[in-house]
Amino acid sequence: MLSIIGWVAKRDWREISRKGMSAFMSNELKGYQRTYLRGLAHSLKPALRIGRLGTTAELLTRLDGALEAQELIKVAMHKPADKKALARELADKSGAQLAGLVGHTAILYRPREEQPAIVLPQRGAAAEVDEEA
Image (cartoon, rainbow, N blue to C red; front, side, top):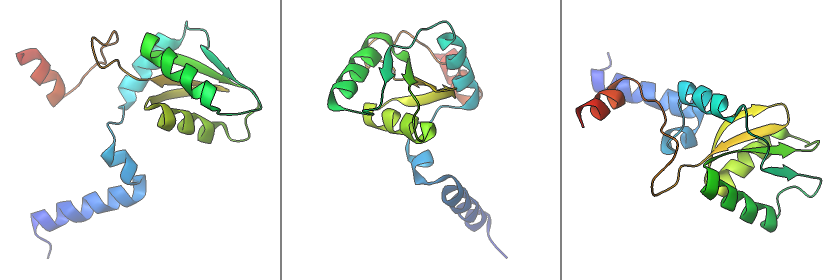
């Protein structure tokens, strides 16, 4: 018979093996936060376009500048071999989070370190902490 602690540890390791360690190590967006960001991005035009050259040093520099200026951007990809992998690669290399993928357009979000313009909605315990402050 498993103790409560053993059961929790066993359950957590199952989730880690199913979702991957990166999902637990990163500050991943919740589903309702991704939905909120996709709604904000609806009216935006793509800030960058990726062609056949893929991710280059210049593209990553422009991506970093666009994220610093706007926090939430769209990146259009022209006929990528694997659009999901390319979108994840852009998010990883820029330190952003992938808020969505609509067609061949990735929606990336990276809050500014000082004075973020976009405040993500919170639910549950995090919302209660914000109300007390």
